[in-house]
Length: 205
Image (cartoon, rainbow, N blue to C red):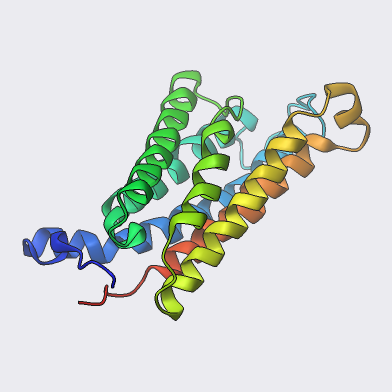
């Protein structure tokens, strides 16, 4: 049986934040997918920065937004909904916490660089999402849907990690930098948003 989210009824303020948490994940995912478009247009398809501008901003400015804003929104929403996602399983709660920490550390790194840094976060997010999909209890259709989205997200992020490990010379020959971003930020962002949609429900008592 799904554990009730005690925090939802602790106070009106916390209840409001619990209701906003899925929206934060949705906005984070959609902004990730949307911000990747001007970023890749300014950067170019390969690892070489073509130093273009979109709306007066270069790839550093767009990459800064891409690397900070979505991560903070998604991490905040996931942290608030960690018990709802885990369904009372301590191991699943720990995995969600690891994912939140990874996203926030990635945001801090990008904040420090004032640009989009290397995707080291994938080394934590890939096992975290795949592990979470294995730990989520599919007690009803809504939880089964959430588990399916998390599993799909894990596969997409794992694909992105594999692309990131391709040697630069080989990757540049087929525009691998843009291909990587399309998978991790484009498709991945849409799956984050879909996860937020799947969490827009009250937990069963």
